[in-house]
Image 1 (tube, one colour):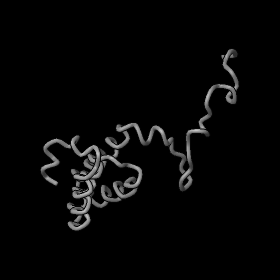
Image 2 (tube, one colour):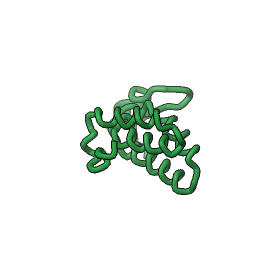
Image 3 (cartoon, one colour):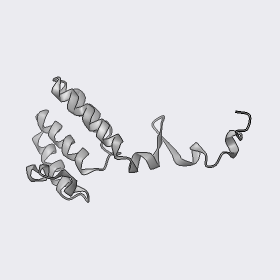
Image 4 (cartoon, helix red, strand yellow):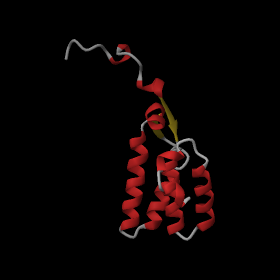
Length: 113
């Protein structure tokens, strides 16, 4: 323990790689590149839908919609909008999903769009 360098000299600082938004600090590099964050959010939203909490699922998906830019996230968000009786918004997201760069990762779900 005594051989560790002080925080200021241990390579790149946490502050150099983060930004603050609304009082929350996000690691920008991890947020954009790591797909597991998107998968965890969509999984939680699907769990909400399965237990009948569609409104909570929609709130969750809306909260992270600007940060998550994957086709799978947008597809799930559109499905939850459809479950919440918002078919026009869902249709717009389905169209957006088909035009995204990673739309081919949806597989057969792309035909649903």
